[in-house]
Image (cartoon, rainbow, N blue to C red):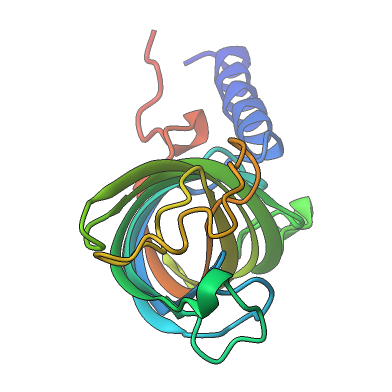
Length: 237
């Protein structure tokens, strides 16, 4: 092999590595895992009391890491939503009261932005093994019970923090809010009180039901990124 050819190939590999890394490429493309946490409802039966009627939450998630700062996540969650008007200061027409209890299956997708380049490697790129992040996206709520199954899209926004515990293992915590486009998540079978209790029709963006989820997650990295500097074999031409 000619010396010039050898140095040319070495330079191509070095340049390819630099381009790959400075583009913010993660070592692994994907994460898979799950989490546990809690949820609570906000709506006609709970106007402003955060963390009232907390319930368990569990889910599975898949994340695609586009680069050190940008990721896209899909998740499948299960939780319960419960609430009651009993004992509230707010008085409904006729002193009527209502209590509800629903199962919720949540299909969602979010985009995430890390405030710091997230990795436990490539320190020359100022990466950090811990990073806060913000997330936003949309999804679908499927909620049986209450005399009829509710299926509704939602918008979501949240914030959290990620920590790379060790190679391939990540832990995280996230607080996110779902704004449903339905006003029937708090309807109990045979009791329509919370479906516009004051007879005021709601708009598509106002007076809808919300639920908030706090979850702690664990994920595993896989899918080594196909970068030129990872290739074992050089072009022999």
